[in-house]
Image (cartoon, rainbow, N blue to C red; front, side, top):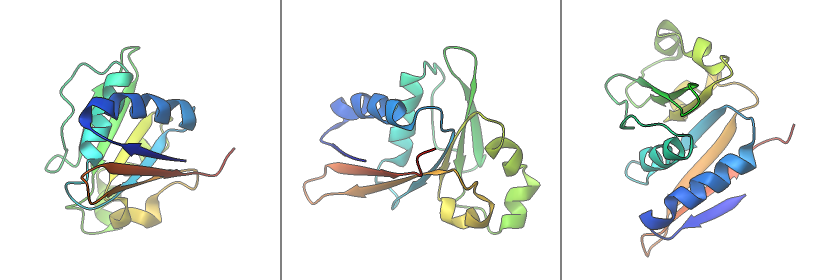
Length: 141
């Protein structure tokens, strides 16, 4: 599945379509260069889920936790500064990934050996006119 995001005015609509498409899937690997909109997309998904906290990049904390409108946790990872799989294991990434709660992982390539097999891969890119493209790949259950 692929969506083009023409502007920030459309991002919440795309986030809602994304959530409908992925269903109950919980772990999302967000690929794309810095500045392409990965965190902005997680903010939009958070709004769709009823998160009231300010969703921001967890670059220094590595993981931020938010609470949805129905009280469920959502985890947002930024693995840019993670230097090894062992470092990710030390902060308990597997406990999050297998919790059944939504986990959004920026820079997942840094910890690819630890990612669950049923992960949803999300590829972000920018078109020459500034529009963003989100391509989602997952194995259907």
